[in-house]
Structures are given as structure tokens and as C-alpha cells.
Image (cartoon, rainbow, N blue to C red):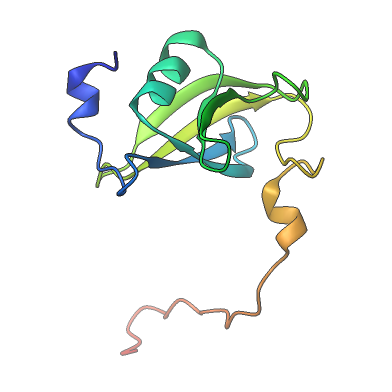
Length: 124
């Protein structure tokens, strides 16, 4: 069972899930987004390996069990609203199911206006 002090801080979606952003611990590279319920988070916090809830298969899966591309936990943080987790890992191999290092390579960048930070004294 997940520590009640942790569980009460979580704000879950309608399916009881919290978004888990996975980041390489030393380079800060964002690798992927997964979903965790209380049990997946408990397993992640207590085993040193990342466990997700698969929304499509409706089952738990430990990253790397079939692919060999494991994620070893280096730290887990909860955001200020309690609705997202940051899971810092040591990633072995690819994080994406496509075989890419990160899930954000295949999707590619979207066209976006690049903002410019106002200079001091600028009234924008």
C-alpha cells in the first residue's frame, strides 16, 4: 500500500492516474510521459525500477522487462499541485517504444512563436 501521507497529496484524473514525466537524471533530457496509479507509484518508490499503469492494456508494466530498456530510479518528486510526478532515472537504451532515445523525437517540434523575454524597464 502506498504511504497514506503520499497518497493524500496526489490529485488523480477520473481514472485514478497521475502523469509521470520521466527525465534522465544527469542530462535532464525529458524521455517520456507515463501514467501511474497508487500501486504503480508504490512499486516505483519501493523497488528502484519504474512501473507504470498501461491505459491500453489495463495492466502494470515495469519499463524494460520485455525490451531490456530499463529505467532505474534516481529520484521522484511531486509537483506543487499534486497532479504530476517527475521521475528521474538512469535510462538503459531507448525510452520510447519506437526504439528512439526519447518519445519526443518521433513527434517532432511544432510550429510555435518563440517568445522574447522583456528587457528591464520594458513595459510589455
